Structures are given as structure tokens and as C-alpha cells.
Length: 279
Image: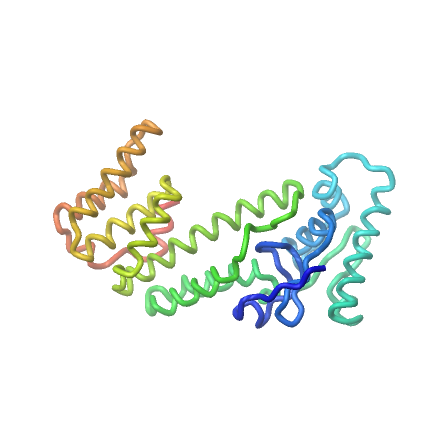
């Protein structure tokens, strides 16, 4: 195993890690899991924390559902190795209470704050609840959530459909959280400090119109109407040239509002409306 220090926010509570290298955390340091299938086994249990993972699901994730001689024995050996790791790292009681063997499969119990991916989702949900009344608090919660990421989700894990769908889910959740953080800054009236970051993200993800919309509004609120309209024209040209389509009605409405100095631009719609429009 290789030890690596973790950021202060993660070191407080996290025991299991899905962002970056899959592994367990002891005393604020990552203990990476050796072996691709061992990492996939742990990842599958963590994704379904608190729920039974059947043997058939493990076979699909570990061996792509292919018939394997003595597959049950191979799975039991992986479980035994994981239980031994938990025992040596956290003690006999921890291993006995957390990793449970059932007739139909296995279950790993962990609190929300003990898994970085689950903690990330919890912090994002808290931020959504704070946005309307305290956008700066929402920004701080989103910053804390995004600080949990130190690499691609499920790095070093091949896995099957369950792992693959989780990668897509968390990557999308991360991008949405980044957008929400920009949104909270604009709602708080500190849009000038995020324009540069917004431009970078809009270049990295040119098809996410919500980023373009927030960049336009941030520029407009900073007294840069011409730059805001220029950004719209860049997005429109890219969409027309590369996809053969016009910007969405939402983005066109924002452009017209900027042209007309619409007072509605002084107050953004709430986060829920923004997310629904973006989706």
C-alpha cells in the first residue's frame, strides 16, 4: 500500500474513497487498494453502501458476467482480503460490523460522511437549501464538496455497468456543482471574481449552455454588455457551425434581456429553476 496525505476537509470524517484512487483512509491518509478486482469489489460495495450486493452483481462488475470456474471461491477470496484489510486498519469490531455476509450477497455499512462521494452529495444538497437565503454559505458548502475531488471518480477501476453508470453520475454531479458555485457567487453579487473561471469552464464544456448563460449575466452585471453579447454570438456560431442548431430559447431570452437592459437580470431565477432549464 502507498500512503498519501489528504486535504483537511476530507481528513475529518472520510473513511472510504471513491474519488481519485479507490481506497480506505486512516488518520487522514489514503491507503490505496492493490489489485484492479479488489478495487472494483470495494467500489461496488461503496456505491451500494447499506444495500445488499448480490453475487450475480459482483460477477457482472468483476468478470463482465462471464462464466468463471469457481467464481464463488474467487469472490469469497476477494471479500476475505477486504475484511482482513478492514480488520488490520480499523480493528476487529469495525470489520465485523461493517462488512456483512448474507445468504444472497454482501453489504458494507458506512455513514454518509464516511464515503467521500456520499459526503459530496450531502454537501451539495445542503448548498441548494442555503442558496435563497445565504448564497455565500451555499458557495462555501459547494467549495467544500468540490474539494473532496482529487482525481477521476473510480480511478483505476474497470468494473461493469454499475461502476460505469456511477462514473457518469458523479462526473455530471461535479459539473453541476461547479455551475451551482458560479451561480451562488452571481446571486451574492460577487460575479466579477468568477468571470475568468467561467470563461475557462465555458471553453472546456462548450455545449453546457448554463455556463454560457451565467458568463453572459456575470459580464453584464459587471458593466460589460458588449462582452456579454459577444459571448452569446460565440456560442451561437459554435452551435450552428458544429451541430447545425440554434441556441436554446433560454439562452436567446437572456441575450434579448441583455440587449434591452431588462431589470430581471438584477435578480437571477432560483437555483431549482436554473437547473430545470439547464436540464
